[in-house]
Image (cartoon, rainbow, N blue to C red; front, side, top):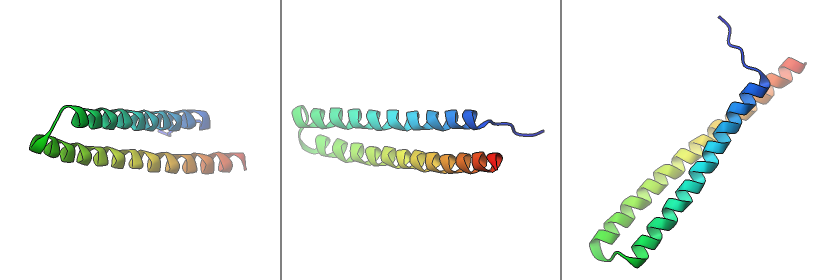
Length: 89
């Protein structure tokens, strides 16, 4: 059994990962903005401080995930281009 994946199919998958990454970045910004506004307007004291620290850690985790998506896309692009170049040669 052979794996068959055209350059166009592979590029479409990489484009999907790019789109997922962009959506994740936009969602993270929306979440961060909402949390900041909530903490600034409605919360005070220890609860706000604890929530703010926890939220910041989650945003850092999310940022790490986005970084991994970036690395995956870069590797995929590199491999796709290498295979496409080899196929044309």
